[in-house]
Each structure stands twice: as C-alpha cells, then as structure tokens.
Image (cartoon, rainbow, N blue to C red; front, side, top):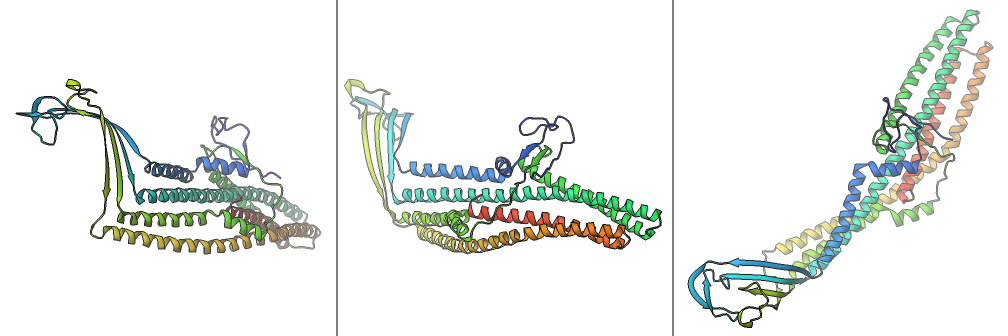
Length: 441
C-alpha cells in the first residue's frame, strides 16, 4: 500500500532538489530517504556535526601539545652605540659598545632552530579532558541525530495520516451528497418528510467543510515535512508507506540495546570523565613543570656561519628549567574546589540519566505494545461501522429507519476511519520512538 501525498508548486519551472522541474513526476520518499535528507538540511544537526568534528580536532591539538615544538627563529637587532669601544665575544677586536646593556653588539643577528618541550601533569590532564570532550560531543551528536529522526518520523506519519484522512473526508462528502440526493428524491415521491432533506443538507454542508479542513491539514503536513527534505518546500513528493506493520521487539532485546547504545547515557558518562580530567588539571598546578630547550644556529654580530679570523658563529645551547609553585594566594586550591563541585554535579546528572532511561524504556514499551494491540480492534471497528451504515441505509430506503440513524451511522464510520488512522500513526511513532531510544533506527 502506498499513501500518496503530493503537493505541487504553484508556479512553473520550480526546481526540485535533483534539479528537475516542479511540474515533473513527484519524488518518491521513503522513511529512510526522509531521514537522510533531513540530516543534510537541518541546521541544528549540522551544528552538532560541526561541534563533534571540532572536538576531535581539539583532542589532536591536546596530544600535539605533549610533543616537542620546533621553530626557526630569525632576528636582526641594531642598537645605538654609546661612543665607547669594547671587546667582542666572537674573537673580534674592539668594537662600538651598544647603549643598551642587554644587547651584545651594535649589530646582532640570530638565525636559530629552537626545540622546546614542557613536561608536566597538566598536559596529560588536558589530553584526558580533550578525549572526554570529544566523546561527549560524539554522544551529543547521536542525541541530536536521534532527536531529528524522531521529528522526521512524526512528521512523516502525520503527513501520511493527514492524506488518509483527506481520503476519508472525500468519501464522507461523496456519501453525504448521495444521501442528500436520496432524501430529495424520496421527498418528491412523498416517501420522506422535508425535515429529512434539511437534515441531510446540513450533514452535506458539514462534510464539505470537513473536506476543506482536511485538505488544509494535509497541505500543512506536507509543507512541514518538505521544509526538512527540500531546498524548496513546494517541491512535489510522494510518501511511501510500509505495506506491513512491524512487530514490537521483545523487552529483553529492548533493554539490552538501550543499555549498550543509549546516547544520553554515553553523554553523561563522557561528561563525568571530562569533569575528572578537569579535577586532575586543576591539581596539576600544585606540581612543578619541567622545561627543556635546545637551540642551534647563530647569534653573532655577523649574519654568517664564520666570523672574522675564522671564529665560528654556528653553535648550540641547551637549558633545563624546573618551575616549582610556591604561593598563589589559594588560587589553585579554589580551582580544585570548583572542579570537584562540577564533578559532583556530573555524577548526579549521570544517576539521573540512568533513572530517566529506565522510565523512558518502560513508557515507550508500554505505549508501543498498547498501540499495537489496538490496531486490530480499530480495523474491526471500521468494518463494523461500515456494515452498520450499509444496513441503516437499506432500512432507511425501505422506510424502517430515520434520517438521524443514517447520519449517526455516517458519523460513526467517519470517526472509526479517522480513529484507525490516528491509531496507526500512534503505533508507528511509538515504535519509532522505541527504536530511536535503543539506537536501532
């Protein structure tokens, strides 16, 4: 069975997502295709994807900070001389003395390769924090994906149901027209009172209004879904409905899938790991940092490998520094306390997420099973209402039923058909929500 939901563009030459004209054959959209298109078009999901990618790069940056860094340093200095002479340290005779005592010569050139490495607990903590942040961003991306899937599923089946209700409204309007015509004919041959005609006409007018409302609802549902699917929401498309109704998975399978792949739980765990890393980073300020430096190149009054009289300007130097924290006015202690407070809050959030997962599973499973069990009953109600209307019409034609009985039977059939569509949507969306909760959709 394929439910047709077609909404054509009002103008000519409108372009669809595949470049075809809006007046061409409507695009056939399955549920999987709708989800795929929505993921490419929805801005909040795109932002989550970007945040996840950026967090992965932060992890790479944090790991790179643990490795030695190298730069090629070049510098030329000129200092105003003070009119005196001094003895150069590069084997040169006397030379003008610079006015700035920090500089070695009036002209000084540096061209050096510099390697720096800092070893400390803070770098390790930053890597752990970046790893946890990347895992958190990935979990939040999955949360955003499943939220988008849930939205698409609801809009998808709402659109199908709106289209089916439009067909129900058309049938009811046609039936009301036929009944109004029947009562007029019976009145003409004096088999029915004029009150029957009036009642049938009132029912006919109501059905026409219901048809107009159903058409608006169907168009609105189509547009709401099309906003997520196409660059131009006026693009005509057709939704394909599954020919069969899927069964509800077993409770054991649901619980196992939810425990292993629930993104909310993964997000809470990643947040806790990130908080632990922040505590470690704050405590690292109590410990010393070891700095290593190696420099190779020139730092001389001449920009050359060799100076006058064969003096070699090219050389190397190395240094080791150890910075030991002594006093910072309790700033580190307060930062540690802040991080511990946030870590405790993350633990509370984790336990709350676990409790919410249990409750959501129970609610979703109960909703899905109940909705599934009611499908057969709803189908039976439609069949019963249709048979009741047929028998009531026969009795009315034979003069044994009143017009009110016919109108009640018509209303009962329309209500039963609409209730069946609502029940189908309820089951499809509840099943999709259950599958989204467990990560199987």
